[in-house]
Length: 135
Figure 1 (cartoon, rainbow, N blue to C red):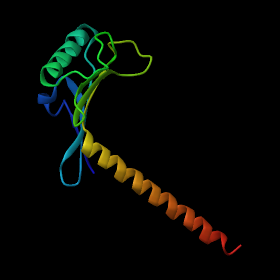
Figure 2 (figure 1 turned 90 degrees about the vertical axis):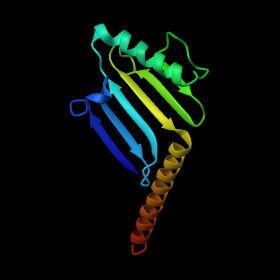
Figure 3 (figure 1 turned 45 degrees about the vertical axis):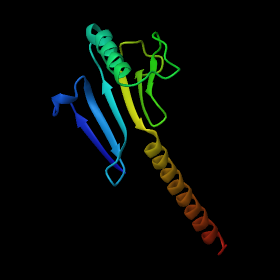
């Protein structure tokens, strides 16, 4: 896995996002892009509407879309984009999180991580069993 983080102070082309995290396979295939925006209270509605309008134009809106939601989902089963207000219980206008996923690549990554975690757990359990044999 490769993970790169960009900051808008260094790259003004990613605005309105203050931080963007790109995750890719070791072959360089992008499976996830996450962006965080924290517009001022005055700009919040316009920034959110602009993002929603751009995504609605590019992707179809998935069934869970409701205009008053704090969470929006666009795309299809292969490429999806989720937009949500940051922070559970935080008032709207406190920040936005945008996440793009290439679902087949993301699922493959999660599968690899799960397999690695299970292998590590099995190694640790075997090491404990081996150390207890001498008691």
